Length: 282
Ligand code: THG
Image 1: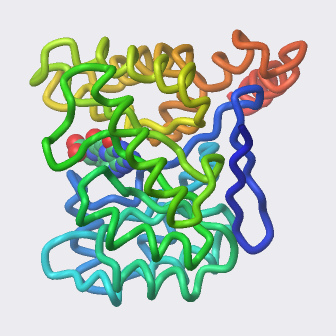
Image 2 (image 1 turned 45 degrees about the vertical axis):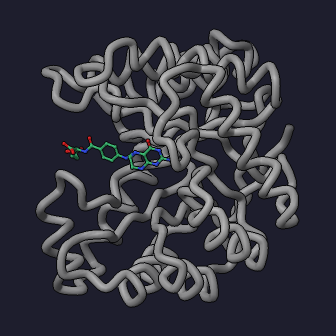
């Protein structure tokens, strides 16, 4: 199963036998008051700075979420897409459920964008699948629907199947769907990690899909989040996640080591090169 995303000049390929693709989570005003203020003022220079920092840290794709108080997404989302494209050529993941904002952003985006996030709610699928099909997007399918997030792995598989069936009817092929089995906060939901990982293994074996995961959600509300996130990311990659949404600077080392251990970095060439570079710079 090969999923391709692109910007004007770059193609990113996602497949189980390829290195992990990191989707940088940094352009998201949740928990980032400075970004929320910049977006409210229409200050896209700060958005550009966050894009460049993540590209430098090793992100392969950038998630773009501009949803915040006092922000009109119909204006801000295309403005952010344009501003990021001026400084950085990574493919983008548009993180909004506002159809008008998505259409405005996709109309100016050059390439195949990732659309984050469609779920199994009837109204969401009805509104967003036609837009995704019209612009030839790859979509993220979140395993939640009108009944909420299923508490079992098999329940999440059923939601993934439902979204895939509807997407295929709308003209979106299975290789253009990344399933997100949903990482919830381990502090708030008992066994959030175990259920999520079981769902990932099930979706990989039953549906063969490529998979994303907002892996940092797992540590919400806990101390020492960075350490929890890195350990959970390694577990998620082992289970089958191959395009996680993460803090790229924090996740890069884990992803490179996972590639080495999973046989997706032949002879450890990438790993050794990165370690040499680190040593030269220290
Ligand atoms: N699945 C999909 N998309 C998603 C999520 C998901 N998008 C949003 C989120 N979940 C993933 N992105 C983030 C972004 C930021 C944080 C966590 C997940 C985060 N931010 C810090 C905070 O809130 O305290 C602040 C930022 C920082 O200091 O780094 O933790 O599950 N498809």
